[in-house]
Length: 243
Image (cartoon, rainbow, N blue to C red):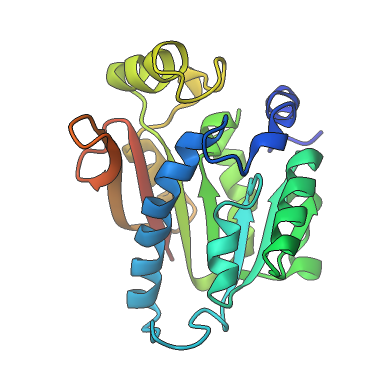
């Protein structure tokens, strides 16, 4: 039995996968926060790996695994910088959309319609960077999922996780307001009981031998009507870990 995916979650997202690259569509909020996530990740990678950001293909020596890649919103920025990207998603419709968009962008990305349990370190190798973005809040057994995912991380690799904090504020804003009032995401997208606090996530990572590097919040500025990076991690946050 595959424990790293929830079939009901896959079916739910599969129905709207056609809309992955519609900037004003059902994944519109992801398009708005994605540049913030990508900058956070690249800034840390360039610093930690001492990479020349002005090189023609600065990430050419790095292998990136994007788990739960969806339509490829985060896979493509890394591929454009020269990284060897493998995008994995259990939703076959999302993978088809990702493959088509990458082809149109003339990008070589290895997309796989499978779960990480269907992969093997022997066949697929290990990666310098692993992305787990807006995925943990759709996983039933987070610790088991991480135990599988971390097998693919190189010794000095970095893993990035963006997800939703678990508290009363996140229930009100990320669940009810975002889904039923503001219509930022489709109704039924999230289950509050699957949210995870930064401290619990860090404890899980520590059990697997990883330490947290850097953490930031992603918040909506009601005055400027735009998303921005923040020290406030009470709702949406992105963090990073390494051995």
